[in-house]
Length: 362
Image (tube, rainbow, N blue to C red; front, side, top):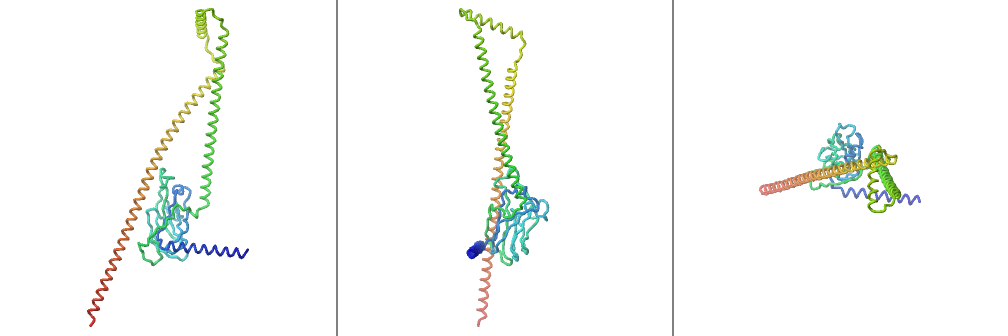
C-alpha cells in the first residue's frame, strides 16, 4: 500500500509538472495579461487601506507563477486617494514590463525583486450609485509589454491573456468575515420584513372577519326589531285604516325623537368607533399604496437612468478599446515599414559593396 501511494503521488507530481510545462508552451508568446475585477464599489467599501487581493497565478513569455497584487485603497506606503498595483515574479527573474490600471499606464521598468510595483498607481474614483451593482461596476488592471531583460519588442508577437472574472485567490480573512456578516445581516433583514408582512396580513384578515361579523349582527338586530314592530301592530280592517295607522305611528315616532335627546348605546358607540377605525385604516392603506406606487415609479426612472449610464459607459470603453487597437495597428505598420526600409538599405549596401568589389577586381 505504501508503494502504491508513493507511485500515485509520483504520477500526480508528474501530471502537475506536465500541466505547468504545457501552460508555459501555450503562453510562451503572451506579453499582456489583463485582470477584470467585478463589484469594484463593494470591494472599495470592504477592503481597507493596506489590504490586497491577488490574481490567479499565470505564465507568460516562458515565466511561470506570476501574479498581480492589487490594493483597492492603496498599500501602507500609498498616499490617500490612490490605489496600488504590484507584479509578483519568481525569485531571480528579471523582466521589463508596464503595469496599468484602467487607462493609466505605469512604466516601463525592470523588475529586480520578487514583488515590485507602484504604491501610487492611480487615483481612486468610486463608481456612482447608478453604476453600482451593474455590469459597468468593475476595474481592469494588468501588465503589458512583458519581455525578459534584453529581448526586443516585437509587435507581431503581442497577445492578450484575459483572466476574466476569475475570483481572487488571496484575500484577507477579516474581509471575508465582514462580507459573510453582511450577507447574514441582509438575510436577517429579509426574514424580519417577511414576518412583518405576514403579521400585517393576519391583522387585516382579522379586521375583515370582525367587520363581517358586526355587519351580520347589525342586520340580524334590524330584522328582529322589524319583526317585533310588525307583531305589535293590530291588524287593520281596511287598507285605508292601515295607511292611517302607519302615518300616525311615523308622526308619533318623529315627534318623540325630536323631544328625546339622542343618546348612543354602548353597542352603537362601539359600532361607530369600529367604523371610524376601519375608515382610518382604509385611508392609511390608500396613502401607503400611493406612496408605494410613487416609489416604484422612482425606482423605474432610476433603473432607466442606470441602464442609460451603463450603456454610455460601455460605449465609452468600447471606443477606448477601438482607439487602443488602432494605435497598436499603426505601431505595427510603422514597425513593419521600418523593417522593410532597413532591409532595403541592407540590400543597397550589399549591392554597392558588390559593385566596388567588381570594380577593384583586376
